[in-house]
Amino acid sequence: MKKKNLRIVWAVPLVLFLLLGVYALFTLGRPAPVPVKRQLYEGVIYRRVVRYLPYAMIAHVVVIDRKEDDFRFLVTPPNEMEGGALKARTTSEFLKEFGIQIAINGDGFYPWWSRSPVDYYPHSGDPVTPLGLSASNGKVYADGLKDEEPEPTLYVSRRNELTFNLPPNKIFHALSGDRMLIQGGEIAAGLDDSILHPRTAIGVNRNGRYVILVVVDGRQPFYSSGATYQDLAELLKDFDAHFAMALDGGGSATLVVQGENGRAEILNSPIDNYIPGRERPIANHFGVFIGE
Image (cartoon, rainbow, N blue to C red; front, side, top):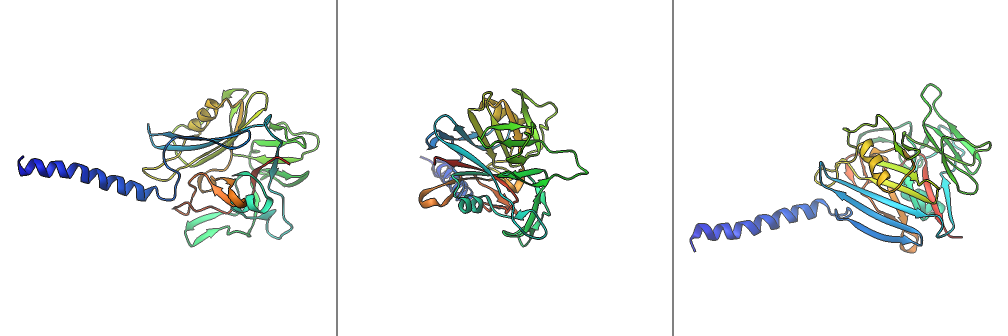
């Protein structure tokens, strides 16, 4: 065999090996970019959805079957503190503090900035206030920005029934979001189909039996670019959502479950201050208790 051919024979596997090595290093510490389906708890299924076209997108979907166990929901309670309605926490801190089994990030909030890895607000424990209507255990602690258009809102009753934009006579839990994605089984008109970001959303099926939590990773080239609002709505539609609402996205998008020994296990790849795997302290969250 000629030397030139020998060099080609050796070069091809070497290049492939180097590419695989670079990819492995790039994805180190992140969920593997492969489809996954597994049961987290009785009545709770986790799926990792991976798409490569027209851009890389990794979505994390938790489907909760409320008929299979005793599920209770919690919106982050307020704190007595100056300068805000509650203290900022990461989603992992929220899960551990309240002994929750599943948690996602909630509404947008203020004040907030992210200028660099060393110049950002809030840090854990800093005072913040949600942008929209927020309530926990019967106490309304944020009523939205008066000069802005009201945000869509998820209401959770004492009996843990979920409804959107239909406030009860007495509010128990309330969590506002960015926009409605699906209403009455139809994808909302006019959703953006061009801008990619990390996303978080919550939905329910027609009879409320299934609760669907979605977090999409983004801003991570060659791993997951993110999703448009249209992508997010279509994904929820694929999981039979009849109503669905987008929550805060970007660096806030996080999905956490309770792992072994009560530790927090992050199922997605959050990104904050341009650092993959770094959680952002945020205002409120949506949590799920399982069992008694």
